[in-house]
Amino acid sequence: MDQVLKEKVILISGASRGIGRAVAKQLAAKGATLILLSRTLRDLESLHDEILHANNPQPSICGFNLCSAKPEDYDDLRRNIAKQYGRLDGVIHNAGILGSLTPLEYFNLQTWYQVLQVNLNSTLMLTQATLPLLKQAITGSIVFTLSEQSNTPKANWGAYAVADAGRNAFLQMLAAECENLTNIRVNAVLPTKVKTSLRAEAYPAESNESLSDPANLGAHYVYLMSDESKHLNGTTITAG
Image (cartoon, rainbow, N blue to C red):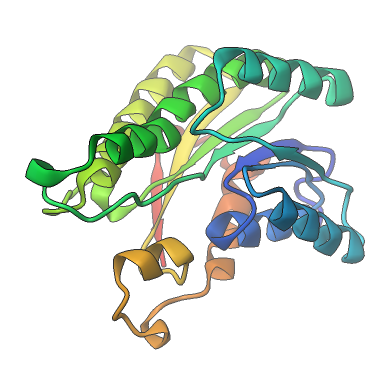
């Protein structure tokens, strides 16, 4: 199991920090070749170096702003992946921003559009860009990172909750559509009470002692990216 992801090429969005960063390091430790996608290039570069220093496969870094990216940017991303690797075995939709915790009556429209663009609309665009490559894989896996807001949205969570509920619906539709594509499966991890900057922004008075480390989630993503989970489709693993 040490190299269960050997020779698999996996793209992860929101890879520069938090859950994405922790998961990326564990995927690489299991032999995956990673495409690290985030808008924060400096953080990606340091992650790239950490992965190399651990004697793991060399990853690619991709500075990509999901808020402002246009369809042609996604087309370029697909062409670059195809040129460099010839295929793609997995995609992890992990990127997300909080926006603000504000009643809907007063929610800022620009913030609403930004959160929906990063957390939901980019999921469609990235999926459309990568599906042609995933179809070429022997077994392809798409994994979403969800939150509790995807099932039980609370007051004042605004665009974040709406986007996460939309991601959950998107996941279920995509999983159903991929049933006829026997080589692609679609699943999710739903972290609870994990120490991230996004959670600190949402719960500024919360004690870190009550939160789990993002590294504790890595095994679930490794499992869903490995062929050990090829029988699963449309499943959400709750972990914290």
